[in-house]
Length: 334
Image (cartoon, rainbow, N blue to C red):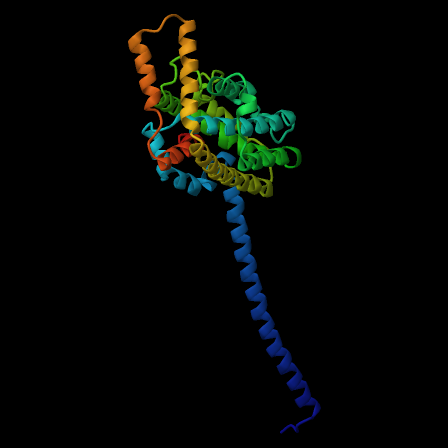
């Protein structure tokens, strides 16, 4: 029998302790290995997911926002053709500022590899079209008259920031806006033309007309293929997807600002004044093309008298639909 404290006992105790520590260490190592394998598996799945086409990822990343937009009352009301001239003018003005900023930054980055493959100014750019619409809707002094709410200015500042500092994110805004407008544009054009009784020759609706695109389906395929070919690492791709979501949030803030502006204009009786101004311009434009019959004049007066919805809530709801539908309806149609 070995005495306590003998060399043999001491050696046995040491070896026993080391054995226990070794067993505990093995368990810890196994746990770390399992965690590492799980992390590697997760990273592999994430990498495989992010290796998919950017257009698919962007549509998937913004799906929830799209669904929210689809189920809003203002989108359904707009599709019924219930829209007032006043809100249409305000939304068109905001779109002008947004597209002016977007296209200014696109021009600055047209040779940059992070955007050059999707540079299609003749086919897609909307600034010139919006200028035509604003001149028709506001008159020759439209530049001095159109408002730029703070939220619209915030959107503009974001576009200028990424154009100068994060040009790889421009594609998120371009894809969200242009392909959305191209997809839903013709439907929206018909609804607006009928609801506002705008001329069949297209005045006031140039924004929705893409003269440079003969086949929308084929062009969208081309655009997506060019976008999917953009070289970017996983981190950049994630930032692009987040920026696409941010574009929707910026639009929502624009909606809220327009609500305040519409409320103020309603207090001042501005909608009635706008109705009379546009009716006068239409009468002058018709006179340039020949005399107008009494019945036609009566129909013109009646249609603008009935143009404005009767409740402030409906007018506000419909105002938002132009911005929301060009994004939400358009992208779902792609």
